[in-house]
Length: 521
Image 1 (cartoon, rainbow, N blue to C red):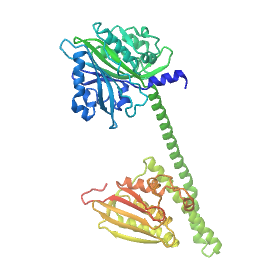
Image 2: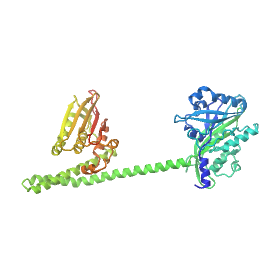
Image 3: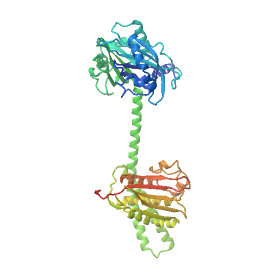
Image 4: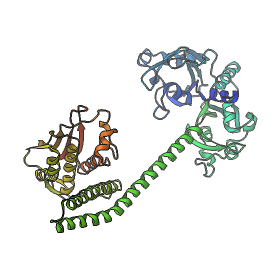
């Protein structure tokens, strides 16, 4: 890092927290240093008591209120106070208060600046500048010169841009303020505020029109109204900067004599947000293209697979007296074509669900029949593999509002998955139980189980546990994700559980029971 970059980085770290406090001891404005120090954002705090920022014991002691009173009497006050951070931790700070000149009605305001005490948690490397940070304010020429000099010294330490001015223009700004606008000195800013807004092309949108002068935060503050606004500005060299400006009026004897503004350069934050949005949009576009590709491929595969299945079935029926070798070959063609057809169906289902195009034919459905049909479909495969299927139906009635075909698909996928990962001599148990307002379908097995680290991802699309086991059993990793999506479309939820490798797995589907007064649609 070069010396110039190091200096720029040092200024970007908000070391000084600056508050503007009104005559009711309420927060009127603050700079970015407050958020850096305490973690609180300005939103929600403006208008709240300044003392509410204190830790509970410090608040109860009334110390901060007493210090405000001292500053009102003597002009300034210094001390220590304990603030509470947003994350719940405490931080002790050195606090300097300066009283604004009272109005004719006797109302009083304050400016406060604070820095963490040396050695405070999370503040290593921050210099203790509280001792010589006596804040003064714009006093219409009648204030203490020493106080004003101390005020300028304190503001020079603030990493944000600080401007003090009147209707005629800016009369003081610190170095970060000059750097932010690309100005050489405050002389470059000695013009009416509306003229400065035009010169620096202040606008809401980067490519938008200039902001009307009456909407400029500094102009609003000069009219007696505190203002916060995020705007773009263009420096003399043509570069753009995105600024968060906070401005507040300075009153003398009840009249607005000027204004003070604190500007923060948030260009880098905005550019990071825009870059993140671009990456997110590109990822979403890539995901859409993937879904469209899967849909096209699935449709293109469906036609030749249907022809293969049709001819395989026809040849098996017409060649019953054929040689064993031919019969074995036809059976292999039929079996593998059906397997590929199931994979295509899964891809099509995923594409439809992703696009929100999967339609359900909702009618009263008896889950006992659904479970029975699914068991009949997987029974031949289970018998061939030597896996026993146990059934336990203990619910009456077992009616839900749903799509019978899709609910059969849910149970079939769970059973097929259990059988796939259960070895010879093992068992799969399916139960249907009464859960009060719900019905529970549970499919458990004595198979290889699921690694606890993989359980949170078991319903993710195209996700499978890595290793030789997954490659041996094959599949696209879509069956369980389809189960999850279909169950959610029926207003239910599904969960998975396993004690780990070799301990089997358990899947539970919970669906809302159809009550008597519910009208099916």
